[in-house]
Amino acid sequence: MKKFLATLAASLLTVSAAVAQSLPAPTVAAKSWLLLDATSNQVIAAQEPGLRIEPASLTKIMTAYMVFSALKDKKLDLNQSVNVSTRAWKVDGSSSKMFIEPNKPVTINELLYGLIVQSGNDAAVALAEAVAGSEEAFVVQMNREVERMGLKSTHFANPHGLPSPENYSTAQDLANLAARLILDHPDFYKTYYSTKSYTYNKITQPNRNRLLWLDPSVDGMKTGHTEAAGYCLVSSALRANGSGSRRLISVVTGTASDQVRAQESLKLLNWGFLNFDTVKLYAKGQAIATPEVWKGSQAQVKIGFNRDLYVTLPKGTAAKLKPALERKDPLVAPIAADSKVGTVKMMVDGKAIAEFPVLALETVSQASIFGRAWDSLRLMFK
Image 1 (cartoon, rainbow, N blue to C red):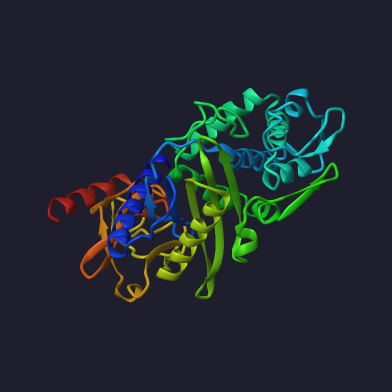
Image 2 (cartoon, one colour; image 1 turned 90 degrees about the vertical axis):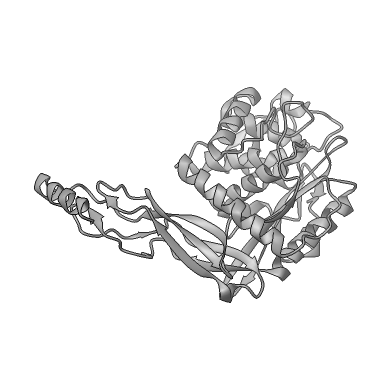
């Protein structure tokens, strides 16, 4: 799986380079930024995407992911009440808080609204303790998840994002993290991230993501700010794309103000939707070819992809798109399902603008000893 993901990542970089050469990116007033098409999992454009930055409250995207995973695995329940520890209550009083109190139980559901809508650092600590027993144990789990996701330039030191030299990430990693949360936990994402305000302890606080008011297609994500980090925003929008829909995720870091991070994020989202199309190439499980198998229990194998495959292109170029399949012939059994058997390159005007690994869609076991011997002879004369 890791090898497959690495191959996929390399293909996406190829796509991104081709797209960047074909259409100039907008000027964005941010320290680093990135625009990701989450439907095709393709970076459309970026500036300093690998620059190490302080994620501030964008850290809470991972905290939410961890809580959602615990809920999915039945380790927590939304209606479960937890006691507020002194540590959670006393988290930096000058920072964002939900205003939970000791000796006043609060539910996981309330804490999630406090974390995501109100950006409560106290809620982050309380949730960390509910999931892992302590903040320190939760941070260990966060970094295990970082490794599992392949976020190679990210490390977390706490669940809330208050300044620490050991709390860092990049625009690239944050975009991938945001996409994973939406993909793995769509119902939780829909429930919490589009909420515009939340009241707890008789205190109503608005969601700091201004785009929820400015653009109806924006349905989340998360703001962040510290003096060192500047004003940061991960935002996501879902708009119509032919008969389906298409999601873009923008990340801007190190902007000068709350207003600037919102306007620059909206600029990126609009530019991406207006200037690019996302085209479905193949359906999950669709056989794109049935090449011959040697020394196998069957004569042919179906090959294709284990997910719906999309590509994002500048508008007006989709009609020029042509696939070119390259196989690892001869294909000799045994062949495991989901093993790489070739590559498909997407060509425009004779140039490869993207390439994707082609997988075996079924397992092919070895033939009998006589069948293998016969095919060995045949291969000698092939």
